Image (cartoon, rainbow, N blue to C red):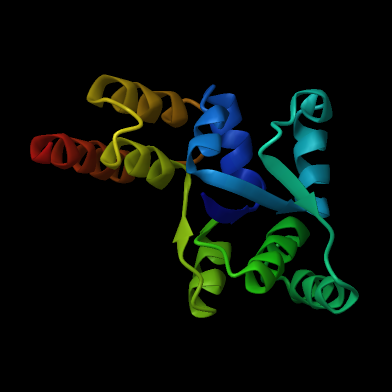
Length: 167
């Protein structure tokens, strides 16, 4: 199983699309405390339905200070900053975010980053979703609070066609 660290976005967007359980197919997902708080604010019943494969981890004191500094600098929101610092400590296979600034910052630290659309494409590529399931998952994600341009959605749909042409 992969170790993955996520910020708020992918968890919220996948849950809105009814696809959150797909993350459990990938591995153990870790989130920092602030991400758990953000999700609870957005989805009040979160604590009652939080999956058992999703773990909340506290930052170490020096990590919390670094996260606060990143937040105060205006580079990232606090949940993203905490998630990136947790990823630095855990050295996960992937860091999940749908935020451009968080993606750029994590990449600059050498952390492999994927977003909600990438998760669906990966699950299709490794056989967890068939073509119809993956296509429907992309459409459902497009209808959530995830901001996706039409060009990006077309790219994702073309990638899906390529994946299933190979199989």
